[in-house]
Image 1: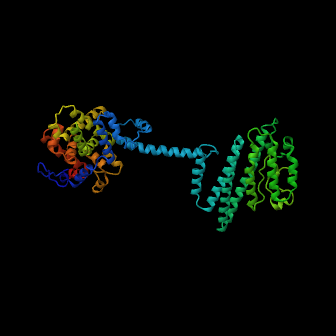
Image 2 (image 1 turned 60 degrees about the vertical axis):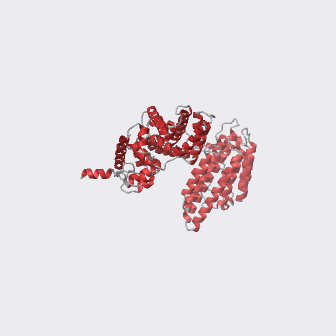
Image 3 (image 1 turned 120 degrees about the vertical axis):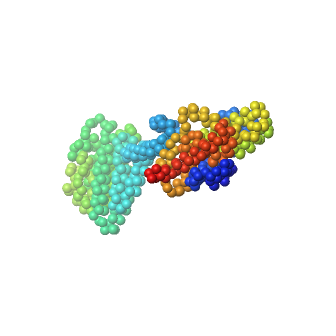
Length: 357
Length: 182
């Protein structure tokens, strides 16, 4: 209305000069004048008033009606109220000042806790997607150099194996899940291959080899672990309480529980080429699975895919380090990888602890 | 009745914003302020449609009437709450990066929004803050303010002047400090 009032220092009514109307003060006063109802608010309000006057609705209803379109803006959150009462302050600014950092801290803690809890998640868990899509993605993103990327990929590949092992040990590894894990495992090992290739190309052969070797050692260890789990779940059904795994030479023990295995292994031992050994081993696992009783959903069969994938990877690895340590406590030596030079001799000397057959 | 309704709708369109601003000044809550505006109009209408006024004088100064109703509702609200809602808006501004008292530049004035400007004015103790608000933000005449508050025009004039002084000082704390030191 009287905008002029705000532009000069003369008070219109009294005619006096108001010294206090400094530019700053005037500016603030002008800004305050900008506050008003939104178009929606006003429209809604007028409408509600009309309804009220027409006698259609009560005052309370009219007030609600007046807010109809703007009601979405403020939904009182039960959490806000609960947290506010913690501070028991009636002042608006106090709530604002403390609640924003508190909310930020809570969110941060929740995020950290979730990712931490997710790190041990297995497929089928609620947090498994977090592990895959958040934790592992972040790890991958943080890895910048080829060396780092390769290491991260190794870790993730091993994670897939561990997940399969844990699920199988529980008797909970479904075929679809295993297929997914195999696919992911293969994707990660592809990454390992790619990155180590890049390392070699760029001249860093030492790192590339170290990473590959470390990876293969891991794979071997896991290959053993997988076999152990397959056995154990099969043996659950049996009466014998023989503890195969603790014996360094297991052929005897295996003989007792699985007579059908040994003949096939002899065949395997006699074979020379790498590929046929691998297939033989895979076949062995398949058949041994079929031989054993399975009451809880093909537990032993189900690990075969993973095992095969690990096999393939070890085969095609082509690592130069053939004399890897023997980490086959309690496993049949034929499950170990044989390289052409060794295989041609029919046995890998220095590689296996136990009898071959 | 038709005339009355029409009048009220016109009044709503004319005064709803100003009343909203007034309620916001008093309550610092936008939604609540909107509710109060609605209720003010409805109460006024009820009063007038009951045949109490008989037209005439009340109609002439519907605006002052509306302000009176809103003002009383606000007083009731204060009594219910036990105090005035926004006590520490200067601290609000501080945490948002403003310091009107310390900042010698004019830039912060550009950066604040209407809500913050109103809260700044509300920092001025009552009844001076209200007088300044009514006079320079709402652009009411001294006569009107006098009628609304039930005080004399002179009282209002004094309050306005004192309010402005304090408002200016609010923004120029450095200045007054320096002057004291000298």
